[in-house]
Image (cartoon, rainbow, N blue to C red; front, side, top):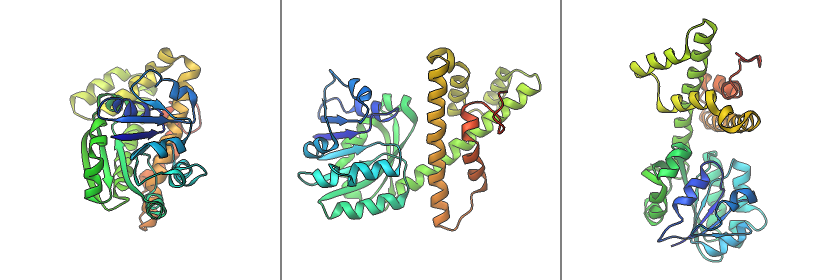
Length: 287
């Protein structure tokens, strides 16, 4: 199965590595040469451009940062739409607006390119194990065609409905996760400010079921990450993640606005995410 993967970031790289096995004839690409170097020696080919992926693959996974990058990969000079040598299916794993997916699908259909939104959730650790959940919008017959690719890195695949529905589910699911992280951050600051151990808070939250696995891993990495990575690398990573999840919440707010819906807690979380990831209060002060 001729397959391509574009975007080898924190979650894209482990997803792509899952495809470095039979029956996939895989070619990968990322604009960051450090990211592609990690695939040297694996059972895949590293492409020099998006165009090379387009000419090789029948199914292309795209896992880039945002709407603008996704449009560049598909519609830019040398992009998938211009360079596809034969009909291909594009799987959009990025978290973007449903309207972007629908716009791109309309453009793609005129070039013999089909598109599915196939948002994924579960994080890099589950991607490594092939245990992500995919939320797919688009025709069921097209989903069946690409199912072997999704099954390589997903434990479950949910058919969300028409094109764009997968992104709605992803945005709603992310919203819950980010509100959990705000709660974890503020509860930890509360006990710290009162001289109570954060370890005791985690113990109590575990006992009563409040502490989700995502909250636990987030708090532990925020506590130990500087020692694991070094202070500068840790802060840079947390800053990138804070910006990424803020973007994801803006996607949810954009979907809500299109429906005339107000999400006040989501608006508040969007304003707070940098403080949450960098363990600061809204004034920027350290605890």
